[in-house]
Image (cartoon, rainbow, N blue to C red; front, side, top):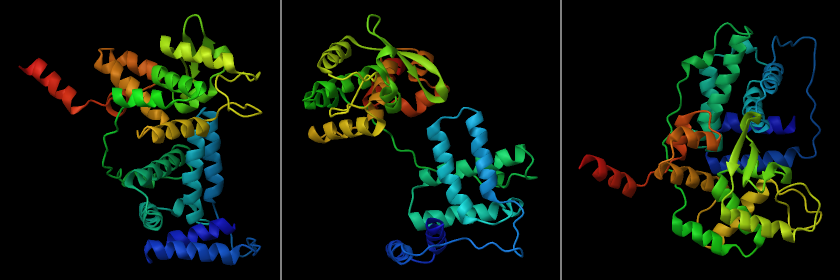
Length: 331
């Protein structure tokens, strides 16, 4: 309740005071309310017809039934909790497009978030109201009047050959080198790599069974180089954990997503390369397409349901490559 009050105050004051003053206000509220016990007063006079919180929980339950990933559900919960807290107590049928725009504007002003983040929030709210309309809890979906927020797309880069070699050289630990090689040759999502167990790996066939988004299975392949370092790493292991990659310290737990991200970032800092696990995925995708692998097969390997995701988001076509292809085909 305390956090909800603070969040509501900050959102509603967001378009009235500057960001620095807003941060000061947040600190004051946290300090003044830390020892205060807050309870919601219930009376027989005030009654709410339909609480947003109830419908939010029903929507999240529907996502679970639809077998959406835990990460997807967590993101919806985060976005919609902020939204429902803003309109706490308001009848679901009374919320219109103007109300939703006001929330999005106030949230952007108070948090200073990018248009991309704001559009993600708009998308979550839109999915929520679309579900409400489909289930006939509301007559019309107010978000249909709210257009997609324009986002400036930044070109995301793949690793260059030089950067990849510097990342490899930066590995002073056999586990980290095996980790880098596995990311480079499989193009796994970081969560997928974390979830790989030893019995998922076909060491003779140099293949790995991956369980991706929506619990969809696919097979990825291990390069000869990756297999060499993977075997060397496994020979050094002194634990009985079933995970493919574990922490270096006792009790040698499975290496989690944040642990892998930290390893890659640290290696990047050591060799002055901007690095994160997903960049390996983009690099593999780009290299496969540039070397002639059919786009549809690349999409299958990446675990993409939409081939446009593979071509539009993951393929980093350099200006030099485009110029080369132009001269090759246009001359």
